[in-house]
Image (cartoon, rainbow, N blue to C red; front, side):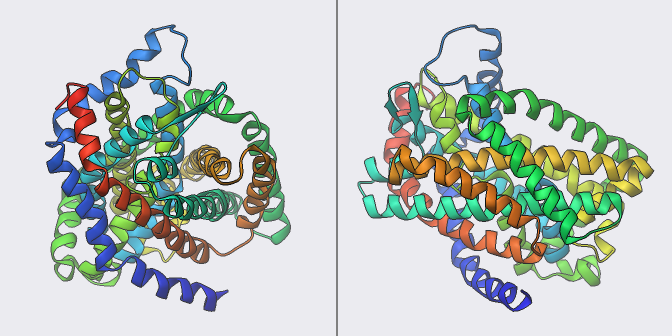
Length: 446
């Protein structure tokens, strides 16, 4: 397994090298200027657009903007916010968090564009609405083969490999909580996760969005409260920690030795890669949720999509990073979610370990639902409805498999398939920029 992990590490050093990082950030920068800093000027409007449907009882063809965002956030807020942030700090140093912030700022413009295109090119079949990058690559860009490549990549990246990451994180957290681990125990956890996922997944987008709309706000609020409680206890470390993050991003050598001595290249690579894995801007995943939203204008859902990145990275990922750094849990030699779990254990005492285990359980569980649905849309795109039952069964098998493999291997494999999703999606965003801008002008937001 270690040799296979090293193979994926080598692949990722190429896929997530300078070219990919420039391509990913460059697309966000390009769209930011083309859309006149939409993430600065209209983020407040995005919050208004998100929560306004909660006070209306209108009948919709799809789902409300809030439920679409909740489904999107259910996918965005997962192990990337806990294990992913910890992995970024462990591999790239504290400076990785700065680059995670940078990627999220420009990522808000990217995800705005994704949601607009998802709305423009969504299709309706009977009472069902579907959309996403495969649809706007095929119908907007006019490339069937690239659309097919993306569809295959997202099925592998999120539906299968990505959900292995989520179940692996749940298993790791539970092992840490009870203080023991065995193949039998992990297998049992994997089967239990798969069983409960199946109950909701087979109910389709309506059941998934309803579950997400009820659970996501509660789990996010609890996590925020727990994180803030630790930060209050360590209030004297807050300013020095922020200074450390910025200093390590610009001059890692000046920040100290050990894990703090990571190079700028590592900080940028892991910051952007883990940032993408967390907020998914540019990955092409969340447009599947935003396509289903019933809105009057495509740009309105674009504004809602930006809120998801803000909540995911600017709020939740930052809180995770602060807890890890102020408690020095990243210096313990632990891996993945265990680093975050140790930070909460130090900050909240005996209550910390079960608290973060419960949070991670719900975060990862809802992410599995979101990612499974995103993959399902692409199975329909490629094979029609007849391929869906087989796909759902395979998702459940990969969930069980994820509970049994090593954490490093799963994360590296996820990075590889994430890159294969990103490339065709970014090509489409750049090629369809004029359509995005013209839609924005028609919606009177330009």
